[in-house]
Amino acid sequence: MKRLTVANPHGFCSGVARAVATARKVLSDHQGEKVYCLHEIVHNGQVVSELTAAGMVFVQQVDDVPPGSVLLFSAHGVAPAVRKAAEARNLRVVDATCPFVAKVHATVREFASKGVYVFCIGHHGHDEVVGVAGEAPDFVRVVEDENDVRSVSVPDGSKTAVVTQTTLSAEKVDRLIDALRRRYPALRVPGGTEICYATRNRQRAVRRLAEVCGNVLVLGAANSSNSRRLAETAQSAGANAALVSEMSDLDGSPLLDSARLGITSGASTPESFLDAVVNRLMCDYGFTGCDVLER
Image (cartoon, rainbow, N blue to C red; front, top):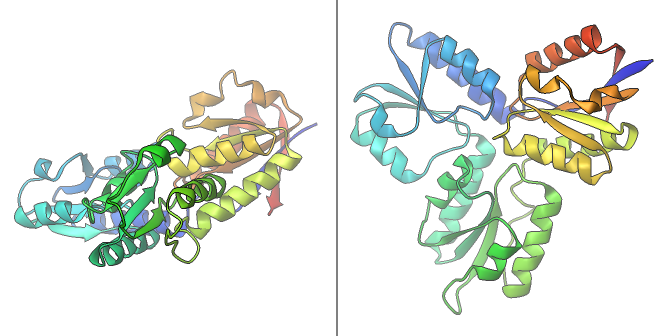
């Protein structure tokens, strides 16, 4: 008998839920006019498709938005320069930045105002990291891996601190902070790191899931940092893991041959997609039931 096991917690975090609810409200409040969003509101194709169908227009830069229009800032946050560009075009801005991300921005501003150089652990080019680094470009150094730690530099005698992208794996962050401390022993580390509680909770849950299921599906977009980290966490815990961004990703997957298949979803993945995947697995792949694994 083949059964599914779903990790709990999974799916939308509070920041994503807040951003999506904000987007829906903006569309409702401005019916009859175009509403724009800078970049994807969250990194998930199902969410973006839903909002596009409802009339939202996604753009890559502020200059793509007609002057005076409504512009939504995504959950990932933006740099001060973007806010100034929107103001210059007289745009009516609605800010859906995740509060945890906003806290990282504030931390960078505080450090930079005191002349402290900040290492931002995160992925080069990720929307969240671009926004954080933009708070103080002269004082922020983005560090993604050990190679960056070895090559990064600040002026001799400078005070240093570290912040992190909110959706990384705790293990990687700890490893990179240790490496930075070896180069900069006086490195300041804010209380805890900025990895949000939802990211940590979902990683703990998928680690537990991997202990009881040899194969794990992680539902989430390929450009979703937190979803990719869930797959990596499951693999590091000993399971085979695959990222499922759309229903067609299930076709031909060898993971579906297991007697007990684990499922989780990233913090930007809607529950409707998980429900649809579970339904298809039970209808087309012979799974006869679905259990919930509490962490």
